[in-house]
Image 1 (tube, rainbow, N blue to C red):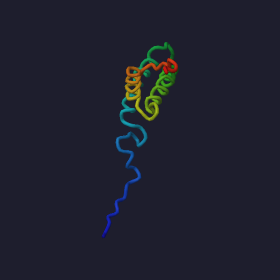
Image 2: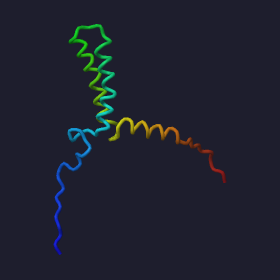
Image 3: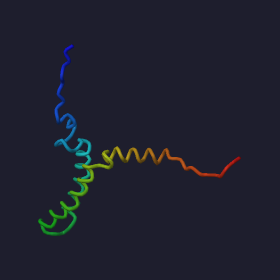
Image 4: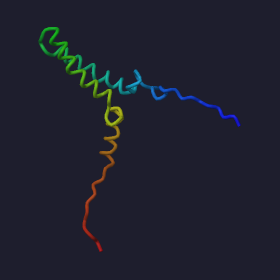
Length: 100
């Protein structure tokens, strides 16, 4: 009765992730949300190049970081889809007292 031994590599959970940390859908959402933030931060204020670059970075990094981490382990689109489904299917419960 020879049993085969299979070794599971330490990075088996890294599949489908970017740099082993972020899910690919989160990274795509971060780019999609971060590019308009970078554009607005870089083009809107009438400042010098250094100040516009700082404005762009200050506006884009929090947006992209929030999109990379997601909400409760889900991506933003998955969370918004679940929230919309919950809002559509929710019921209002009322207590009318004992009906005996």
